[in-house]
Amino acid sequence: SGKSKAILERLTEGTIELAKICAKEKVDAILISSAFAGAGLISREHYIEFVLPYEKKIITEVQKEYNIPIYTHTCGSIGDRLDLMLETSTNGIDTLDPPPLGTVELEEAKETLDGKAFIKGNIDPVNTLLLGTTETIRKDVEWRINVGKKRGGFILSSACSVAPRTPTQNIELLYELVETFGKYE
Image (cartoon, rainbow, N blue to C red; front, side, top):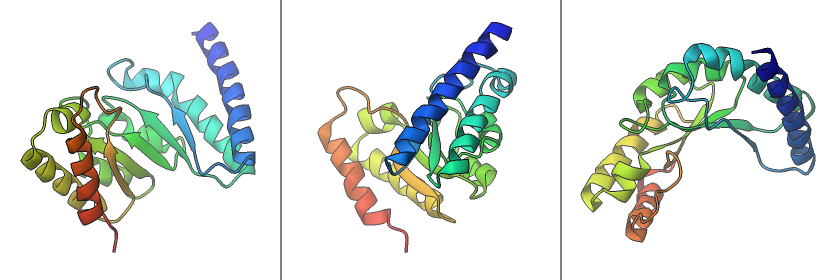
């Protein structure tokens, strides 16, 4: 545990340095990738010990000097740690994989985050985009837009990487649906 934390501390310092360089160059936002911080790989307790303090330090240190949005990418099963992710002071949470790929129910995520961080994602890249029909994609996207738009702070996108061999027409349909139904009024 001591060696792990020493390594994490060094990585944190390097990440802070890199994030400040990016912020100084006036990037639009900074993404912290914690792809392995989901429940599929580490427990909630290990998240508290090995992720939370380091992500919080990165965000706090960068935002002391720069007024820049910082959001966090974590794949898979993160429904049990959304409350902890808020403790890092992140401005947003990226992917929010829905079941069966992950554990994030959009309605519950909106309630847990309570407008304190934006949500980006929640479209299942396999079961919806890769394997879905026009009708199932339309139904899923419209439902997520309607739930996500309530009280704002929602960016609809693929929950994680778009699967190889996803039909182009399914991506185009997603875009068309967002253009039609996804605008805030």
